[in-house]
Length: 185
Image 1 (cartoon, one colour):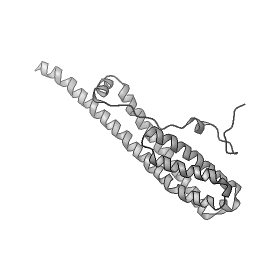
Image 2 (cartoon, helix red, strand yellow; image 1 turned 180 degrees about the vertical axis):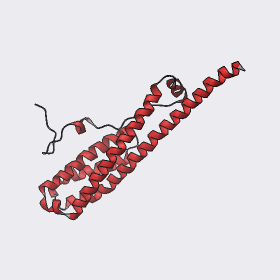
Image 3 (cartoon, helix red, strand yellow; image 1 turned 30 degrees about the horizontal axis):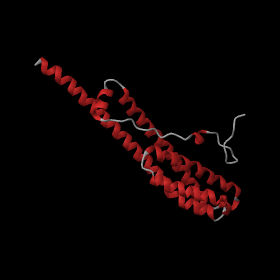
Image 4 (cartoon, one colour; image 1 turned 180 degrees about the horizontal axis):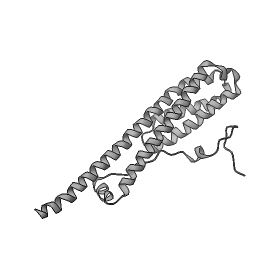
C-alpha cells in the first residue's frame, strides 16, 4: 500500500500540473481571441475611415494605400508575431491618418469623420486593454512553463512558450506632431 501511494502521489501531482498548464494555455488562446475581436473591429473601421479621408486628402494617397494594404496583410497573417508586427504598423498609420485631419478643416468638421475618429479611439482603447490581458495571460503561462517541476511535465507533454504581443521599435519612439519620430539630441 505504501508503494502504491509512493507511485500514485507523483502521478497525481503530474496530472494536476498538466491540467493547470492546459488551463493556462487555453487562457492564452482566449485572450488572443479577445485581441483578435478588437482588431477585427478596427479592420471594419478602416475602409470607412479611408473613404472619409480620401474625399478631402487627395495627396495622401500613399498613406491611404498603405493603411489599406496593412489591413489586408493583418487579416492574412496567421501567427501571433507576424500579426503583431502588421497590427502595430497599421495602428501607427491610422494615427497618422487622424493627424491628416488637422490639415483639412472641412474634414475635421465632418460629422462622419468625427464619429469614425471617436469609434477609432474607443477601438484602440479596447485593443490596448485586450493586449494587456493577453500579455498577462502569456506571462502567467510562460512562468508556469519555466518553474520546476512544471518544466518537466511541460517538456514531456509538448507545451511551448507563447509569444508576447509587443510594440515594434518604431512604435516605441516618441511621436512628433510633424508625423515622424523625435530624435534625442
